[in-house]
Image (tube, rainbow, N blue to C red):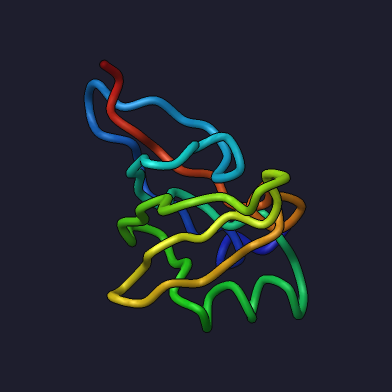
Length: 93
């Protein structure tokens, strides 16, 4: 396996790992890894979902899918199917 494809950051002390689809609005987290491959991975990176990037979960559609996220100053809606491919860390309460 090519290690360059495993773009990850290490969670800080007191942080927990989950996937982005589990971060309910309003919530904040930080990208740890993108588990997608190929064109989906490239597209998520191009949209700003890179390790270390802070994300705010803004709101969900009436039926819960898609969810709107704020990243790098702009808002983007992702399907839960795609958000499930992004590992994030969040601070526990």
